[in-house]
Amino acid sequence: MAAFFRFWTRQAEARPFTTVAATEACLSACGDLLAQTIGMHITSKADDDKPKQYDFWRTSRFVLFSTCVSPLGVRWHRFLDSRFPIRSQNTWFRTRRKPGHSAATLAARAKRRSEQSQAAKQVGKRLASDVLLYEPTMYTLFFGSMAILEGGGIEDAKYRISQLLWPTYLTGLMISPIVQTINFAFVPLIYRVPFGSCFDLFWDSYLSWVNNEKLSMIESATE
Image 1 (cartoon, rainbow, N blue to C red):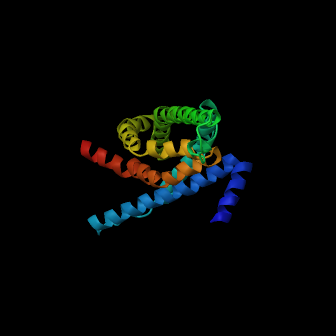
Image 2: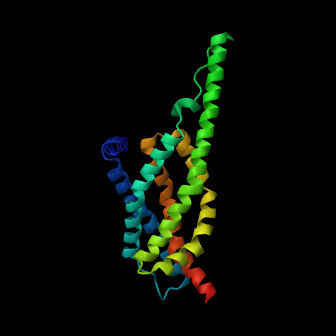
Image 3: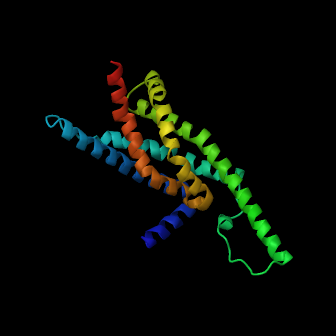
């Protein structure tokens, strides 16, 4: 595992966009595979006469989308890092306090508290930008792209976005801020996209389910 981590780091430093795209492709494929496996298991329990088959093209569409938008994730995190800089990721970790109450020691402690306060504000700005701008944009692109890739038109894309964007966004707000706060505060820039992608392994499963099973449930309820 350590050797693979070092290999991934070298590749990410040399070819960040290619490495992240390959990572996103693998994780999105695993996410859709997980979603379909769970769906087939539920279907087989409910209806033994019509077992659900694995849909390879559904996974292919999911992988294609994730690979194509991965450069946006890299550029987005670079933008946040430059727009709301944090002096050091080590700002959060307390160093061993020197004994005494000299003027120099007190000044050092005050400086560190000031740096931590400033870093917390920058993390908050990164998080707000991510939640309010980046995530809704990605959900819109996802549902719209899936509609087009599945053979639908502009109207189908608009319908899917109108039905699925808001509930998906609200669900994400229960989990994403926690993950992204850790990501923005403690994770170095080079690892920030893959760190989020580890969480995305399960989130991609949810998105795949929303894009397929939940949409079918909505359409059945309106018929």
